[in-house]
Image (cartoon, rainbow, N blue to C red; front, side, top):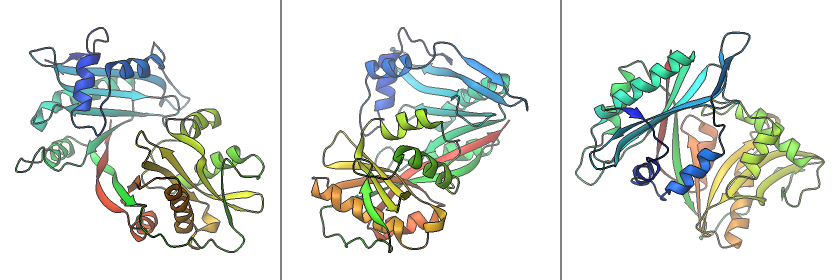
Length: 325
């Protein structure tokens, strides 16, 4: 039986479900705190073209017999989500057959259609089997969803690199100096970075959203969890930031997450991205960071090549699914 999420009772069971296959556990209090930051009421509307705008969400669960949750699904849109789009996510307890998730996907699709959405975006993790010898259900679920009208829009892969070995010396193009957001002297560095993100994200095949306005972008990209101005590494020419590698700290002081690397179009093809990532790696290794993690769209051929050349080892990721409504 599928029913709506009940905030009064479901947070502990949801925390257990979301933590089952996650590298780090989440608590019920953390989930409550995240939800407390969201508007208490939906605010969905349409623009002058009749496309869905505003914000809203739905949460559905499949309860078990003992107060646990066998599956959870949610669909939402934020104010900065592209008009017409709604994002979604569905997860099930380990070992559950993929067909059990289909009623949840149907419930999300009904809500999206009733809200007036044009597209429903989903996310499906790459699988490697629940345990050695057990079947991998992720391709089975992908096949079921493709048969119901979804298509694969992007494939994001994880990658990991060791920073405790010898690293080549970075060689920036002539006229470029490396710095960081903490040390830069260029005018309006944060505004420059926001514009650089805006220009470079357009060329990333894994990017589906629109970039939020400056204040929201700053809160997420610079001030979010693990954000450090001295780990936002910049490539500068004269008074302009022409490239960036933004790195976040993680709960493990020996590990970091490379959040974003971008180079302006006019500076591409000169080895700047590789040199900038090497500069960041030298700095991080010198401060005790031993491992770098990142995520790259499989279709972003230049960045895949850069990371491969720097010794990143590729792991599973997730596919973004799209259904036209």
